Image (cartoon, rainbow, N blue to C red; front, side):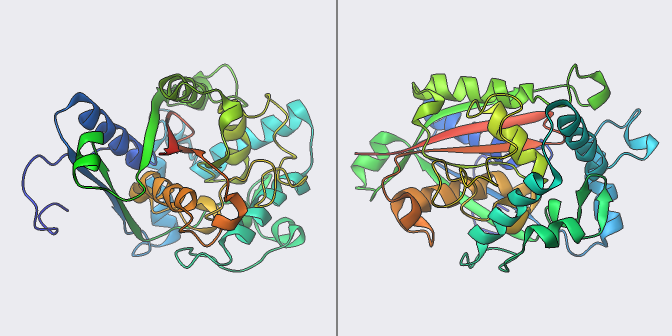
Length: 322
């Protein structure tokens, strides 16, 4: 990538499955904070549609536990279906509640020119779609996506010296991990990696979850958005399932989530996703996004990027600078 951009100097490739973009971004933030760089270009890219769905699914499954789960035939749709079933069994809720997450994110993507899917769907569409892994169907899953994204990180002194216009500050950064295999976890309905990453990011930014105005979360499957909201401390465990259905996380809700369309509708080009979330949030906070009117008074945003079955997670807090 550096060569294609005509750049030389330090260049590093990061690998953390679907959280690779977020991990790369965090490393860039650390480099700027440490004073080893004044300007860091963080980019991610992925080409996925040159493979068949079967081959791409098999390739993605390599990011899961290889010793037991993958060899037994578990893919990510199957793994997230296990998490969804465990959640519904433990806390109740309906298939319609899960479907509302997909409907919401498709609605948010309607006017986003960068979204892979720009069409409206209904709860009935989601429920009647072919089953992928019960209780998840085709519309509960994110698509295979080609895409690229990049952000430029600069130090405060560089921004001041060069009169950078309307910079968005990355005020907090956190990272967490969990066991690779689901079978080694004490619960299928909690995401300790997200909890740790969020706790560290909030502490770093000196805020509490109450300060968050909007989010981009890692909704690779509808249940993943639900678990993310709880792991980020925005909902108590077992209570976020109805958030979309009740309008709490829609564009005009109390806590807008995935105004870009999320992974579900904007798309999930794996290496680019974590960086793309920050691009979308920066535009929203600046007022440069097609959905900015929904959050015109927002000042604090959170980006949540996860890898595997949330075996790794990265959280960043973005703030509008004065």
